[in-house]
Image (cartoon, rainbow over all chains, first blue to last red; front, top):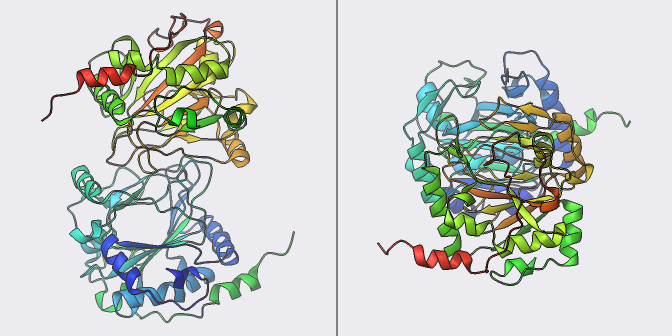
Amino acid sequence: MDQIAAVGAAVRLSDATLAEFHREGFMFFPNVFAADEVELLRREAHAIFELDRQEVWRESTGVARTAFAAQTYNEAYRRLGAHPRLIAPVEQLLGGRLYMHQFKINAKAAFDGEVWQWHQDYGTWQRDDAMPEPLAMNIAIFLDDVTAVNGPLFLIPGSHAAGVQAAGHDLATTSYPLWTLGRETVRTLAEAGGIVAPLGKAGSMLMFHSNLVHASPPNISPFGRTIVYLSLCRTDNHIRKFARKAWIAHRDFTPIEALADDCLRELAQTTAPPPA
Amino acid sequence: MDQIAAVGAAVRLSDATLAEFHREGFMFFPNVFAADEVELLRREAHAIFELDRQEVWRESTGVARTAFAAQTYNEAYRRLGAHPRLIAPVEQLLGGRLYMHQFKINAKAAFDGEVWQWHQDYGTWQRDDAMPEPLAMNIAIFLDDVTAVNGPLFLIPGSHAAGVQAAGHDLATTSYPLWTLGRETVRTLAEAGGIVAPLGKAGSMLMFHSNLVHASPPNISPFGRTIVYLSLCRTDNHIRKFARKAWIAHRDFTPIEALADDCLRELAQTTAPPPA
């Protein structure tokens, strides 16, 4: 994982890392983005959460839960969505050019951030968007330190290997409709693979298979936990059904051209707030 | 912590451990109870959860949340409540003889275990029971492995030092009425002391000050997380108000005589289920 861990270095996943991904269904890379890059993204995320836009969904209490499609209306997130530290390893792993299927900034606000029940992302993409195959990768970029206390992501290692599981459409638990798995399915998978909670500093990056079963508990702590989730899909695997809003399930299948490695840092330096 | 960590050894807290307790408000001891002792307690806990008694409280879904006063109707828990690995260090720390103020087995069931909001136990004991001083100790004994994913206890180190905080009586969030702290109070204390989640194997023991601010999130995992909570109070500090049920806030102030160190092991050996 050293290739990505060294900020700014060329990205090429080793055979050992690839083998681990195929077995476990996820890869965790600490320190992918440096403090100035994270600070830029965090500042812009909080500005986006204040916007009165249809793309910004809220918890029942009114605080932001998810902001969709920020790469289409924010320069920092436009650059993040074409960042070579994401694009290069996912092109390598999926074996082709990529487009952005979904782009979310999940706030999981202090005290108010609600549960995400156990689910597979590809389950939703298959059912709702007619994506042909699970040839898409989830990427989670931590904008805050993720600890045991602020609602970390829970993953069931190896659960991607069993394919799409039966699911029910949960419209009740939280404000976002989701295809969620039954308890017996979750229990069986977790007894086989266990459950892990990848914890790490802001700037860390988690990549996980679109069939990996995951969830996250409420955040009852006073510490925020903002994570950017990008879903990169192989262009020839683009969705066939356009039932959901285009800002939720994107329809621009043009291959992403990766930007330069300093694309975020350059913006951070030109837009940093003046010293207090 | 080696004194308690060595199962069965005589218990005497070192000056360094005492200093750490006074500063942080808690002490964590792994491996206090051995596998056979834990297995006995776990088996008896699950039998108790099946009982149709007023002492067994349930979540809104019907699964057990808390069983009170098991030391008064179960032999294994009677012995646990007088176990020298608990009684000796708490007598040393509080400087006097002890009685049992409260005794709970908290189930935090797989999938269904609900949140415990941020609170101080002594806040409730002072308001509801007129306990004169915070001269009582909370002891948590893990009957399951406690991990980041099954609803671990969250503690704010050092938060005991500020004394009793203002609190509101929460009758809505869960099935158990609790004096809970406001968000600004929790935020201020957590920014000063951080938040820790003591994780450990079944058989571990956590002791924490009765003014330490703590909470625990829901358990969304398929793994149970049963913890026994005992609250030992100095006999001369006994409660003055008898507003709550006697099986919630006990009224037997007779000093506890510690049993022999093998009291649980002996019972485990005589009551083990026959080989399958």
